[in-house]
Length: 82
Image 1 (tube, rainbow, N blue to C red):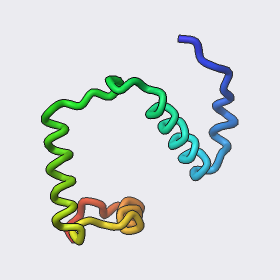
Image 2 (cartoon, rainbow, N blue to C red):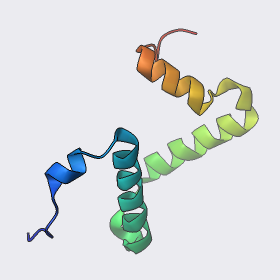
Image 3 (cartoon, helix red, strand yellow):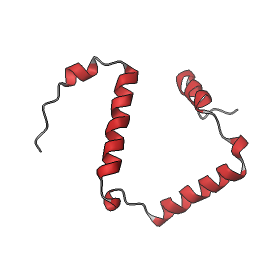
Image 4 (tube, rainbow, N blue to C red):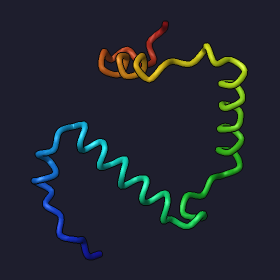
C-alpha cells in the first residue's frame, strides 16, 4: 500500500491536543467517506447499544460527566467503586 508523504516526526512535535484533534479530524473524514457497510454491526452489538441507550435515558443521573471521566482516567480510578 502506498502512503502519502507524511512527516511523522513533524506530527510527533504537535501538542497532545493538536494530535487528538488530528485523529478526530481523520476519523470524521473516514466516517463521512466510508460506505455504510464499512462498519458492520452485529445484531448482538446493536441490541447492547440499544439497551445501554435506554438505560442512559431512564437513569441519566447514573452517568458521569466528561470532566469526571477524564479526572478518573488521569487519577487511575476509572472503574473503581464510587
